[in-house]
Image 1 (cartoon, rainbow, N blue to C red):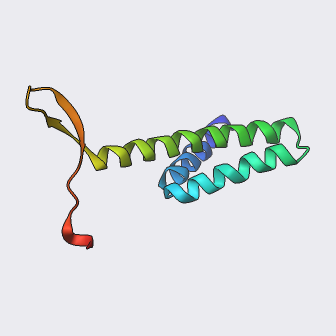
Image 2 (image 1 turned 90 degrees about the horizontal axis):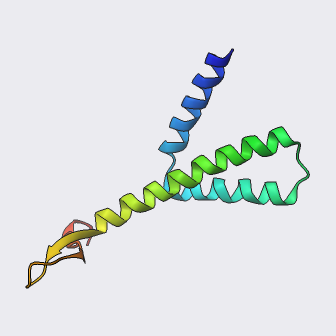
Length: 93
């Protein structure tokens, strides 16, 4: 039975990771609101807390990934490395 629960949790995590950032954030907000507004059993609260924690980590990872995509290291005149905005591609203009 533990294997079935573990496999279910893994597939659920994979599904969460596939969510676009906006959907993951909206789902996280919904979880927080329901936890604050409802009188829920402890087991339900723990399950929602666990899902919320996963969503929070996923959202943070997606934000970090987006930040890396828009920044690049640039060498200054004295050889120091600084972060600079990445050049904007003309393909979307």
